[in-house]
Image (tube, rainbow, N blue to C red; front, side, top):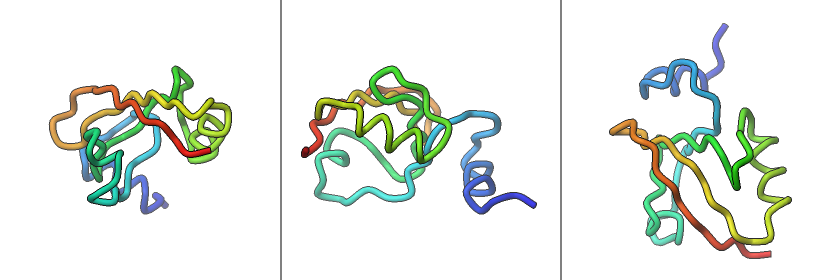
Length: 88
């Protein structure tokens, strides 16, 4: 059986893409201001490919606080870069 995350990703039009699906973004957050949206797919952080939430957490841990995300836009399916400073 398919996981719920897989089914949601499929509904959003992601077929074989690997990454971490954004389930929500606080409206007033820096991530939202930089263009990260619910339904986006984060495929890389600081040039490290992501396949799981564990990869995501490890990439954030390994960062120096500056994070460059490569993201597939959930609506229009183009890729975009989002640069964030993460609190340590």
